[in-house]
Length: 113
Length: 114
Image 1 (tube, each protein chain N blue to C red):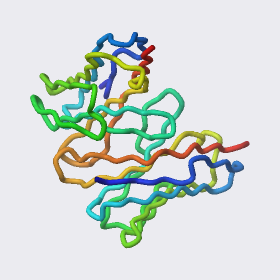
Image 2: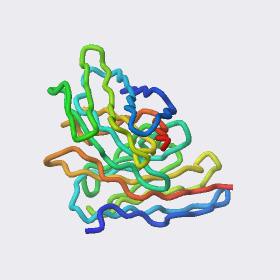
Image 3: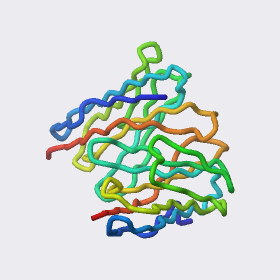
Image 4: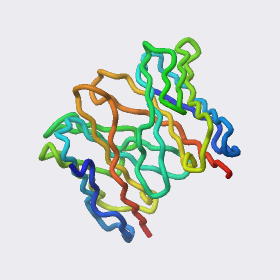
């Protein structure tokens, strides 16, 4: 049981390049989330999904797109990266049954130059 | 939407002393309040949580209190140890709504000096 995994761990992009961050969970969780963490600002929700095939906007969705084609995977896309998207990105998941604990992945550190 | 404020942003204590971190929230409908510990280079990990039908919860050296009327909740760590040094985040959400979205405080960097 690997929990929540994220790929890649580190990435450097040039302004205007695109990339996709992959989040995978093997706990059969319904809900998945993408956050960004910036110094002094805590974690802010980018997008989330309450089930396969469904996504919704969070607090800071601009510049990002997501897809949840399979229940275990939640993809975060940057179509045209900007320096303001330099951040650490965390994925999390919870079951919609039982407790509310969000399980976090180890993070992806993204730098946009 | 929900707004969560956390204080202090940094806290330094001597080993063995107690540490207290406080958070306030704005949405009276919030009913779930977790605390996360984040060590350097890792994702946040849940250490304790409390629901709105409970005023206090304790787990060994860690306790959380909730005052629904004042809309604030606090984390108490007793007999601090150097391994307690980390960033701590409070959060609030409305359990049961679509997505159970968490709103996080800005974090507290706790340093426990040996």
